[in-house]
Image 1: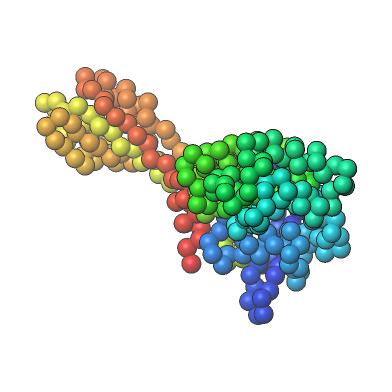
Image 2: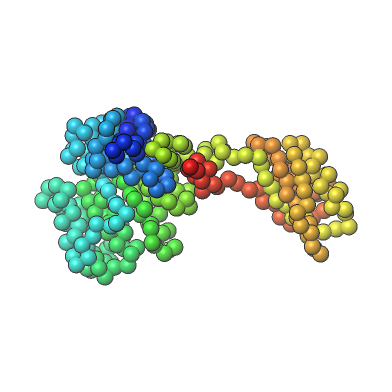
Amino acid sequence: MSIRVENLTKYYGPTAAVKDISFEINTGQIVGFLGPNGAGKSTTMKIITTYLTQNQGKVYVDGLDTEQKPIEVRKKIGYLPEQNPLYLDMNVIDYLKFAAELESVPKNEIESAVNKVVDLCGLQDVRHKDIGELSKGFKQRVGLAQAMVHNPEVLILDEPTSGLDPNQIIEIRKLIKQLGKQKTLVLSTHIMQEVEATCDRVLIINNGEIVADGSPDSLQDKFRGKVEINLVIKKDSIDKDLIERAIASISNVERARVTRTDDKTITLHVSAQKGHDVREDIFRKIVSMNLVLLGLHQEEKSLEDIFRLLTKN
């Protein structure tokens, strides 16, 4: 695995910001690291990147102890902080060459290393422009390029799409997905759609403790409650009470209630037992009654719902 955290604890004075947490991240995973402000997320990331040292526990990056070999660990990590570390008066190529020198890329390899990240990050058309002239989307691409110029095995990205417009967000997401096939990638963000679109796995931290760990789908399955379905039926001469009784009679359906009627439609809300998909049975029942089904939607507990549930104080 690329990152291993064992019983990590960090105090600020008498306050424990991180409390005995452990997890492993394997090569080729894109992991969303989530948590509210003050949860311990940034502290954990700073310890992994050797900006901070822990009070207890161990962190290994590609088998290297972050306390014993911090310089070697830094060579294996590329870091894009939320505040992009750019020199706006430098052009893209000069800045990336400078970043490569800071990362101790051998002089005879700097040009090829820079050209590689320019191609990978789609910077060909702006390579000779001053960074200050670029759009925010291209500035983010330059920030990613500097994090990757030394070809690290681990990338840690803090809010990489913050402040971007929808088109720029899509472009950066595509790039992150591409990078995740080759590297270990830890993505910190408050945007749940970002996690659902890019991440294979989610770690949620709250009050210094890991409160959830799994794929977005597995977390949704774990925290899913009763099945809730909304359906819309074309209004007919049939009595609405009869429709409620008919739907409620379906196996595993606990309740059916008409929530709205108008001149053309009847809307019902149906509750079914957890883990049972009753949509096909509902469809068959509606057809057997010679009614027209206009809409059927099963509500899902979103990742944002789960995040709120787990991070309530």
